[in-house]
Length: 140
Image (cartoon, rainbow, N blue to C red; front, top):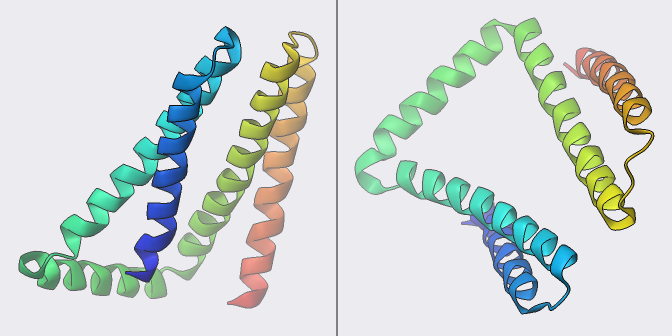
């Protein structure tokens, strides 16, 4: 249940944002807040349903078997796992950066410098991938 607590909180925050977006009278910003709330609630709801599906008693044995097989694969293919993990962490970092950038650009209604920002984000993606990979290589 501990793993579900963060998802439940995220789901509730998403529902609250969607409600605030519906209640706001500002046309441009209310749509943005509503869309953020729906996206947050939708993602958290999907993960909650997936976790609840696999942790039900009738599927518990299959879930444990899948977890055991994934653990064996991960231990056998160490470098592949580290590349995957480095990519996952850098994509999560980039997702946060892109969301914040989108929010700032939407608030200021900026249309210039977009190509420069995308180029900088691409460089950040490459450097964060390499940094996370080297960190995981030293740790494992």
